[in-house]
Image 1 (cartoon, rainbow, N blue to C red):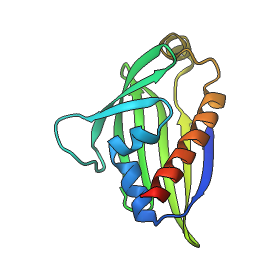
Image 2: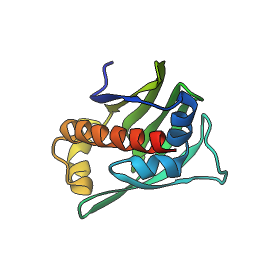
Image 3: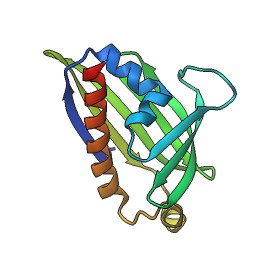
Length: 153
């Protein structure tokens, strides 16, 4: 199935550096558009496949929490996680990193997995009526911040 929103950017930094920023939850939050904090559940300081974390998100006056489970953690190539809200699957986020001349290409993608009955609940919690459009814009901003941070490291 194709992602509901995706974006891509060329980063003049090695794939391992980019992966390190993305797979470090504080680093990911520092470039993300809506996620402001992520805390690993059950202890631990690093992520691997199966790690669960609580995300704190904001958009304007709206605030909400999610729980995510890391599904892919391949250094230098892919970091991905599935997201739930109130126990309901809502999305998958994936960062693919491919080597390129002078650095790497990063592709950020998301799949909207919300059931139709959950849309009104999500609207009340986030204030977003068009999640595809918002995620497309958010991905562009996140990728630019990631590029800036990786290239300045």
